[in-house]
Amino acid sequence: MGAPLRTARKLLLGREIAHMIATAGVSQADAAKLIETTQSRIAGLVNGVGAITVGDLELLAARLGFDDSSYLDQLRELRRDNHKRGYWDTGVRRAYAENLRLLVDLEDHAGLIRVTEAEIIPGLAQCESYIHALHEAAGERAGVTVADEVAARLARQQVLNKPADQLVYHAILSESCLRREHAPRPVMLDQLEHLQELSQQPNIQLQVLPFSVRVHGAGMEDRFAMFRVPSPGAAGDLDIVVTESQGALRYSDDKADIAARERVWARLTAAALSPADSREFCANVARSFRRKTRP
Figure 1 (tube, one colour):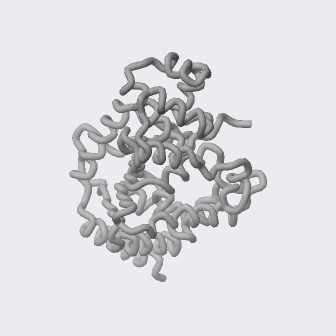
Figure 2: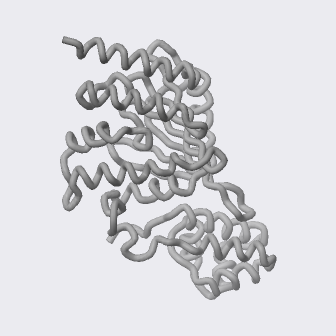
């Protein structure tokens, strides 16, 4: 069995617990004594790991001085989580590798998703034929077929259908994402057309960073995504950055990590083409593919 699964709701609840402890001016150890538990358990809850009963949550809040009924309702709502036993083992969810599950959950709950990609079109922006080509090249995993992988990826993409007041998706793509032929050219054409269609949606912004543009101080050296999950509580929205290297994902809500990525993001968005010019850039790359495929 893997490590306990963190979820967006658990992370938000952990922030509220940390906020209550800090506001009360006590330590985690002192807070633990209030509900007759251990400091390590409180630390786990703050980090989005573990579970707490409604009774213990209400008792902790009351003894830390938080008795407002509306705030307690918010805490109870954050504690409610649909990730029960077997949740990830049924339907398309069983195709998600364990290290992807928090990422998928963040996508479901985020109000803002920002992504950079240097080589491959980001997962939420991939068309079906492109997804199929990528997974076919990678081969099947134990108990998970290519068709399962494709269905799971398409299911994740349903979040992009949310209205702009619920989700904004913003991606910066290196030119290599458009030109690298990870699939046959007809599939690459499908993908380029799909990007152009997505870019017309009011909640989606796509920017291309051409090879010819030099970014001073930061480039597309690594891929990362930033999520902002709205919170109903007092601790504020959750910001978390996800970095990926060779398939390994690292999640961090550390303020220094977030600030560093925000600086990189600001430089990249300023250097990349505007969404309208990026759409035309995609069209030009598509035309070059069409010329290459003519007899």
